[in-house]
Image (cartoon, rainbow, N blue to C red; front, side, top):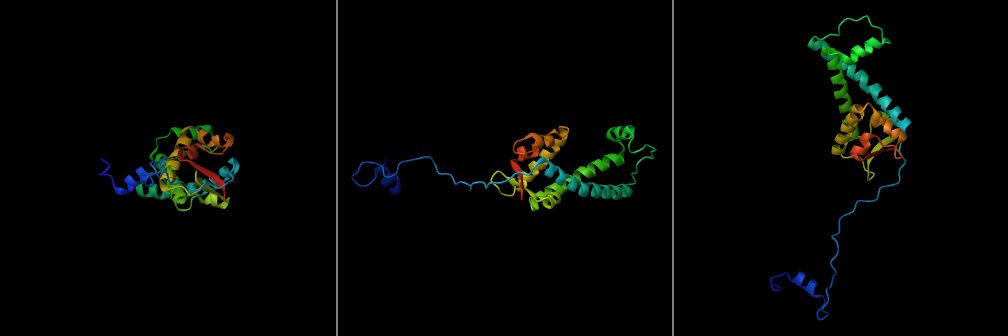
Length: 192
C-alpha cells in the first residue's frame, strides 16, 4: 500500500531518511481566521430612540403621501367622522377598523418603512437618523452587515413590534444595548 501513496505523503510519513520518525506531526486543521473585532462604544438607548424618531419623521409622511395618492387612484376614501383626535374611541376604531383605506395605509406604512430600513442598512450600514446622530450598525466582527444580515435584522424589527415593543425596550436594560433585532441578526449599533 505504501507503493500507491503519493511520494510527498510517503516522505512525510517516513520523516527524514533513516530517522524513523515522522517529519511533521499531524495537528488540527488550520482554519482561516477573521481579524479581531476593534474596540467599539455601543450607542445608548436614548440615542437610538432619537434616531428612530428621525427615521419615523421621514417614513410616516412619505407613507401618508403614497397612501393618499394610491387611495385617490383606487377610489378608496376614509369614511366621514366627527371624532376628535384625542378621543379614545377614535383610536379604538382605528385599531379595530377593517376600512380599506386604513388597511391600505397600514400596509403602505409597513412596506415603505421596511424598504427604507433595508435600503439604507444595506447601502450605508445605517439609516438617515443614525447618520445624523453619528451611530452605525456593525456585525460581530466590526464590519458593515451583509445584505442577508440586514434582511434578518428587519425581520427582527417585526418581531420587536409583535412583542408589543418589548424587543425595543430590551435595549434599555441590556448591558450591550442590543435590541431583539440585534440579537437575532448578530449586530451591534455603535457610535461612529
